[in-house]
Amino acid sequence: MNRKRKLLTGGEDPHCSSQNTEEKMSLNPNNYKLSDRTGRLTAYDLQPTTVAAGSETREFLLKVIDVLLDFVKSTNDRNEKILDFHHPEDMKRLLDLEIPDRAVTLQQLIEDCATTLKYGVKTGHPHFFNQLSCGLDLVSMAGEWLTATANTNMFTYEIAPVFILMENVVLTKMREIIGWNGGDSILAPGGSISNLYAFLAARHKMFPGYKERGASALPGQLVMFTSDQCHYSIKSCSSVCGLGTDNCVMVPSDENGRMITKELERLIVERKQKGHVPFFVNATAGTTVLGAFDPLNEVADICQRHNCWMHVDAAWGGGLLLSRKYRHPRLSGVERADSVTWNPHKLMGALLQCSTIHFKEDGLLISCNQMSAEYLFMTDKQYDISYDTGDKVIQCGRHNDIFKLWLQWRSKGTEGFERQQDRLMDLTKYQVKRIREQSERFHLIMEPECVNVSFWYVPKRLRGVPHDSKKEQELAKICPIIKGRMMQKGSLMVGYQPDDRRPNFFRSIISSAAVTEQDVDFMLDEIHRLGDDL
Ligand SMILES: *Cc1c(COP(=O)(O)O)cnc(C)c1O
Image: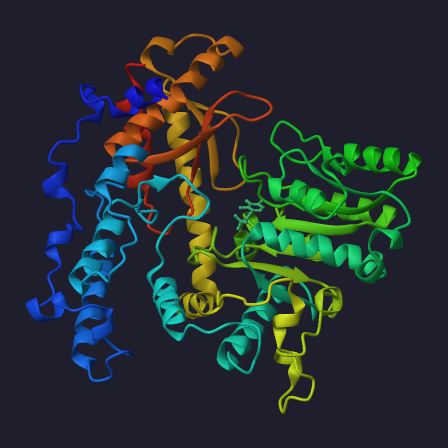
């Protein structure tokens, strides 16, 4: 812990000097003053408690919006830091997080809002390359504001008529883009839960007695298959749903992270010979770390031969379905899947959260998950109750994740969304080209298939040294140090991690529409500035 602290605090370290931080930081809580009169009030003096307080209520909310707009402005300002890093213990001292016994003033609440954003991470900053979800699409954000204000639940048409119809339209369009006619879909709280829905529907389709009779309805030990590069939520299904992780078989992947389908078939046969029941295969379209695409047509052939459900986890790569230029060969064969997970909150830049799960067959979701709660899903309602989607899911209440996507999609048109996906891929190509042009400083690990770029930075002392596993160990040690320095300085965020084949390496992500060629150059130059002496 101490060693880590030193690394990140490094006051004397010339790379980490935080010169003129305070003056430069926007969102200074002292800059947001309500009128003296309103500032002294509390929430009890606003609507709805005080009905007549229309103008005070408005003043308070407009001030909150002021704070939000300043955050948006600084997010888009390349001279602003991405974050103002503090260790947790120091952060606790900087923030007043206590829940008081008595109401605080409205002025205090405004300052709380500013402070919260001041010390947060600007994931929409053009120098944030750290996560699969980045960018701050302003139309999607406006949609999220509206959603928060409408504050309704998605379980019945009764209380969300407009949003339910929007869900229908957008999900139908997404299924058409996958290549299906008909089918069914739902929005879920994240790709992990979307994958779980696929698993549940697959088991229900193949063993419909499970819903009532549980494991006794199964013909034997169920087994599922996925590549060793898959998202961990797939393995989690096997544990959550009673198979046990030993029965989630990890199929080896090739050098580039794609499932080796010959191995998939061999492992299915091996389990069959043991008397087990292989029933579910997950193919990943865009793996989380390397951005690899499993060969979907080959997986589909194997699923057909062995009567397995085929799920495609395109949580990450799904956005490329919109691109005629990049869809093939990456997602060729996706239409042969039984289910597809696709997260608009990743490549498409919809605000968190926005995840979808799609099924080729209609009716499975409802038949699998329906519990017919009589207090919500009355069958004698005076409207078409097929619009009550709430009984298709294992949640009760469901957050409205559709409005921001619907509004964003309209703001770009499908063509605009396609151009956005193409642009991200083109920028990635530019990054690869720049890395190649600076091959003494950067070691590209593989030609990327998606916007994930895996590379090492080579500091001065290791340039010209032949690349072998000993050098990789050295390059790996440098990653966390550079990461610490970039966070301390607040200038850049790029992730690193080890995988099964190699120790720590950088993995940058370009999934923000804010990024330009200059930002890509900045990323590489900044890593060089921060790491040259290591
Ligand atoms: C991100 C990701 C998930 C999980 O999605 P969440 O929305 O974070 O739950 C699943 N699969 C893949 C391939 C992913 O990249």
